[in-house]
Amino acid sequence: MIKFAIYGKGGIGKSTTACNISAALAKEGYKVMQIGCDPKADSTALLRGKTKISTVLDAIREKGSKLSLEDIVYESENGVLCVEAGGPIPGLGCAGRGIINALEKLEALGAYQKYRPDIVIYDVLGDVVCGGFSMPMRKGYADKIFIVTSGEKMSRYAAGNICMAVENFKGRGYATLGGIILNRRGVKDEDRLVTELAKDFDTEIIGDIDRCEEIPLAEEKNSPLLSVCPESKATKQLCTIADKITEICGVTKNA
Image 1 (tube, rainbow, N blue to C red):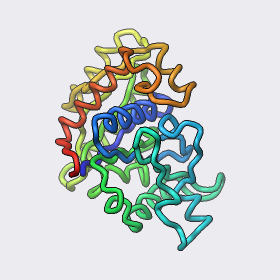
Image 2 (spheres, rainbow, N blue to C red):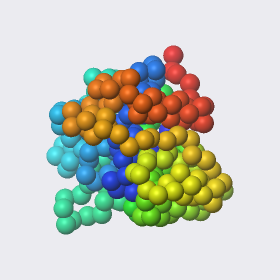
Image 3 (tube, one colour):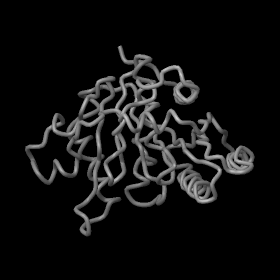
């Protein structure tokens, strides 16, 4: 089993990217689990369509010791296992602490042993890289970190902070940087700016996604691109990124 995390600034398209990568990997025959680590609990929306699922934290509050994996793990039509960590009651509690509690509860309930996924994808908000938001970087969680960014200044700034966090964890056996995914927004000199960012942290752009009409169309239909526009250029770009990630992580399928 390989675990990796996709980080990026809020609104940069990391959840859209994560869902499409999950769908692509599932189509290739991998058993995939995607865990949303954003308090908004919308990471897996494109995979589960209009189906609502209980977040781990909501289920803990509601069921307590009676909580079971069936309460918090939903298998989408395309076979991806969807989990949303959720967040605290608005105005009360810490979102970072909530992520820690959710991931620890999944382990305590034996989620990975029961479902035996080949791949676990953590989709993590990258505006802050502290507390629970850094949890997937820690030992025993993700093996690799992939960062979604555009050439926009604040997106690159957030990506740089994430890279620095990974760098600071070196030597502890924590996750290492797998590469950068360029989600183009039409910024002047975008490719050059993101290439320079990658070089600054001794990594590479593992794939790019062009700005197009198909992505918002698929989002409007609450479905991954593979289902809505299987032959589009963006779909092929995302499938190429999925293949590159499996190559970097050395993924193999469970028997």
